[in-house]
Amino acid sequence: MPADGEASSDPVRPLADPQFNSVVRWLPVHGDPVDGPLTGVRVGVKDNIAVRGVPTTCASDFFVDDTAKDDAAVVTALRDAGAEISATLNMAELAIGVTSQNSVHGATLNPWDIRRVPGGSSGGSAAAVAAGLVDVALGTDTGGSIRLPASACGVIGLRPTPGTIDLRGIVPVSSAFDTVGPLACSLDLVEAVHDVLRRDPAPAVRAPTRIGVPVRFVTDDIDPGVRAAVGRCVAVLGELGFELVPISVPADEAAQHAVYALVYAELVDAHRERITHAPGRFQPETLARLRLGLRLDPEDLVAARALRDDFRAGLTRVFNDIDLIVTPTLPVDVPLLADDGDALERTRRLGQLSYPWSLHDGPTLSIPVGLHDESRMPIGAQITAPAGHESSLFAAARAYQAVTQWHDLRPHMSR
Image (cartoon, rainbow, N blue to C red):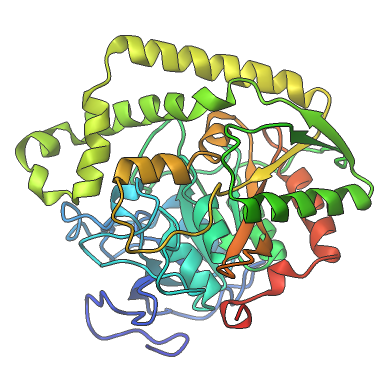
């Protein structure tokens, strides 16, 4: 692969990163570095984010030749802050899968174990960061697409407060739920990139002191290794002086279904002609997900919107008494690539704990909190806050990382 700052002369290099297939294209660095808060930071961007002069493929046969005329707003902001946009990164087709396997660029492999998925849909972003190919990566998150791969690849990933970062130049999944955010091994870098990208200055927020710990969240079917690691994370936070408060999250079991309905209704509208006239150009798993939207009727959407409103109102009441909520990111160990099970069931299962926080109107941060005893794969915990309270997430994560070392582990150190 090219050295830092070099670009391939080939216009298309599907195996620009032959070890993990996380990179779609290496990009040349033009001109002198801009002096700013991100000077010299190597940033990779998910391949649904426009980079001027480069195809924005979305890992889809429909978009392989769609060359961007302009940078996305977030890419412009990063360049203005001194960052080097060094690569476009692999992903799940159309950003709606949980494994980042696609038929255009091929499957991204997890640097911790190449037999396993990196999560999705921002799997290339997480894998490139974990492998040290970039310092920071941008991903998008609709139902968990930053948080799931962050957990699977042992890095930090932020789903920011929806509406606080400019999405122009990003191929949408859902106008109601889409976000864009950073993944990195360094919490300082995640915070610095977020500061550069957010539209408005961060609001003044008091330091978090009370952490909600759900008595049960969505399901009791949590992998024992995951449950234990997240439990130890919560215990450490308690030892650090945070007050741990048992809570119930309202309507958590139904939240995933509500997000599904609202997201897939939008997706079907966006891709209806392609589904009708060229279904064979979709990857089979993608087409199966899109067809979920074809089965929705108006009553389903009315019910989903009502549940969304009830969920948010209930969560507002919960946050009246606490500052943060901690839950696992993935309910299971990181799955193998060669999982021949039902694709829709796999999507449901892997996103079971991330979708509720997509229905929430605030930010969520996934941080590494352990390694699975059997597989030695990373385990992540989600920390969730009220809208605009990213600083509370960073404060709690920084306190936790000051007394633990999970965030310092890299793939080659896990065996």
